[in-house]
Image 1 (tube, rainbow, N blue to C red):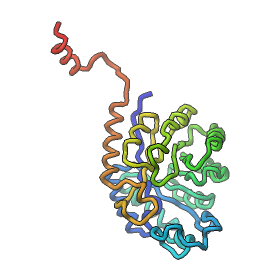
Image 2: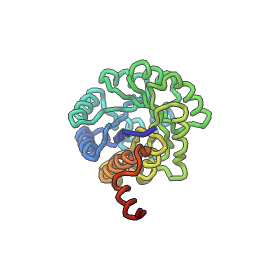
Image 3: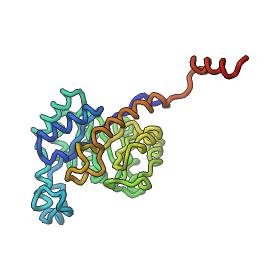
Image 4: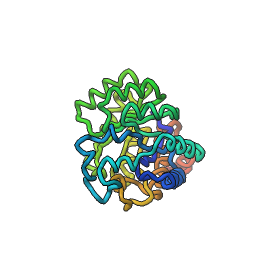
Length: 280
C-alpha cells in the first residue's frame, strides 16, 4: 500500500511548566516548524501521583517545580479553562489540539472540548476502564504501548481488536532519551500486520529512526518538542528543538513523495538517459 500522508505531532506535555504564555510560545514555534497536531497532558495529580511519591521530593531536584512531587505535579497542571483557551489558540494557527488523559475524570473534563483525538499514555495502557470510556466518547483513541511486557502488548491488541477502525496504536519505548538499540522499530510491523493504524512515539536521538518508522508503516509520528533542550524538564533531553522538528517535517514530506511503486515505464528523464547511454 502506498502512503500518502503522515501526521506529525509536537508533544508539549508539561514543558510549559504551568505558564500559559510559555505554552503559547511553544505552540507558535511548533506550528511554524510544521506540526500538524499539538499535544498536552491532562491529569488529576491527586489521583495520578502514586501515594508513595506524593510527599517526597522530586527524584531529581534539578527538574523540580515544587517542594514535594505532588506540589510539582500540581504546578505543571493546566485547568480545563486553560486547555480550552489553548485548543482555540492552536486551531486559530491552523493545527489540531490533542491531549493525553490519565484517568476517567480527566477524560470526562476534556470531552467538553470535543477534540477529535484523545491519547492514552503508556503509563495508563493497562487501564481498561479509561480506554473504554474514551472509545465510547471520542472519535479516535490513540494508545501508546510503552512500559508493557510482550504479553501485555498481546493482550492489549486483543482487547482493541474490535475497535480497529477507531484506534491508533503507537509503538513506544518509554526511555527518556532512548538509545537506538532499544527502539525496536520492527515492532511497528507487528502493529500494522495486526490490522491497526500505527503511530510511533519516538523518544530517541535525531530523526533517522522516524524515517524508518515511516517506511515500516507508521502514519503518525510523535516527538517531544521544546524551545531549548537545556531547559530544566525531564522531557527536554528526548525532545526536538524547532530546527530539528522543521527538518523532520521536511524529510517526512520528501520520503512520502518517494514511498510509491513504479506505475509507469521509464520516466521521461529515464528515457532521455536511456537514449543517450544505450544508444540504439
